[in-house]
Amino acid sequence: MAKGTAVITGGLVLTANGDATPADLLLHDDTIAAIAPAGSVTSESTRRIDATNRLIIPGLINAHTHSHGGLAKGSGDRWSLETLLNAGPWLNGGRTEDDRYLSAVLTAVEMLRKGCTACYDLAAMLPVPTAAALDNVARAYTDVGIRAVIAPMVADRSFYQAIPDLLDAFPGDLRPLAEALRTVPGETTLAAIRDAATHWSYPRDRIRLGVAPTIPLHCSEEFMRGCRDLAIEHGLPLQTHLAESAVQRVAALRQYGTTLTGHLDRLGVLGPRFSAAHAIWIDAAEVDLIASHGGAIAHNPGSNLRLGNGIADMRPAIARGIHVGVGTDGSSSADNQNMFEAMRLTAFVSRVFDRPPEDWIGAVEALRLATEGSAAVLGMQDIIGKIAPGFKADLVFLDLDNVNLVPLNHATQQLVNGEDGTAVRDVMIGGDYVLRDGAVLGVDWPRVVTQAREAAARLKETNAATRAATERLAPLISQFCVGLGRQAHDLPRRLMAHA
Ligand SMILES: [Zn+2]
Image 1 (cartoon, rainbow, N blue to C red):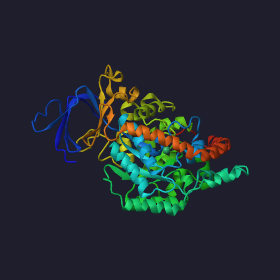
Image 2: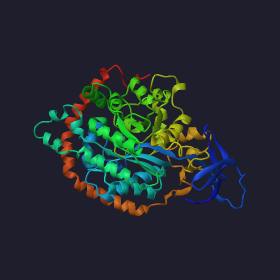
Image 3: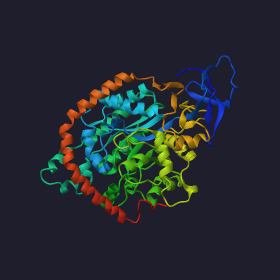
Image 4: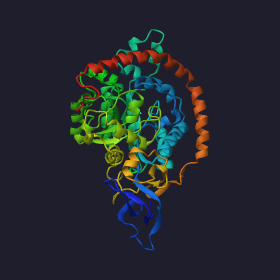
């Protein structure tokens, strides 16, 4: 990492208030040392990096994704969350260790090409998150060059066991199909993560281990406490899908006699390392609980729309001081890994609630959520998320001749409201280019393309029987869950009534 001193000169630098001004960025090794007036760094001994005709912005940070989605992109269309979960065994099943690496490379490359420099990856590693599985995902991020929290997505109950009375609703011939789709014992999973945490060898500022008890309803109380203890003992960030669907809210009230957040609070899971992905179906008391424990929320507006889960209202959470970051969610539910689109949707969906325009999320705020906010979700807010002295040189260079930025009337408004990633030319992470003139430097892309096509064809064969079984279950699940979810509309707190 000893690169010495360098200066990025000739470009426009995006400032915290959203303006773009000519400036030099002085780097020392992998870190920004100073922001200096344009052309002021003239020392002969300083390496010069030309950024003429480039707009330099902080790397966008994806607060919630799933690397296993890379190989499954485009697999579904009119899926609710519950029919997506039902498809999980064939979408993500039968993977080899090479497939895990490949899927994470696909996910990471897409993020990088679209201006994202770090992510929180809830990675499925069925049946158990072994050291080899974690290593393959970590290697993918290392090769592509982006930073990541890799949190094995784990549970000790299947989706079918998690929804009250669902198994009983299956007719006799279908019930064994659902019962066959089981998880491994919780202690086996927890032991694997404990082992990984004890032997973690990746630099923590690059690749960090986390833990993701996937959905509270899929985790027994004992298992959830086990995840909590791992997070505390090893300083791991913990993320769960919280109240992503109306079904989950109703099921939790029925099963726990309290809300999902109330349930997690009782188990001692909330805290500064905790983040909730989605948080659509939460009420004001739950917002207060997350806020009072210093927790965070990963907002995924694209996924929430795609799966018909509703629109999460982030204004009350932001107003209560919760760190809100922005995510894409995985390629099975989003479907792209485009943080520009996620920012744009963050701004736009904030406008459907009954509030005056002054309370909508504007461009400058959306960009801040997708950088500083997401950095806080990853627990990396001290090192990434800003162009400022002391922060890592994770920088995205956009082509000022790209039609999205011509003419440049207001940099941040054009980035959030109009940019789609096509103006991204170069990306630097820790002071090194990892995307240069549109090419990903760390992987052999033609080889990845060939391998991905081969893997997809093979997985289609491998998972054909599982797919056929889950497709037989799907209509019943859809019908059952629509009925269950409707009960949420009888609750005092409705989708658009948080304020
Ligand atoms: Zn997710």
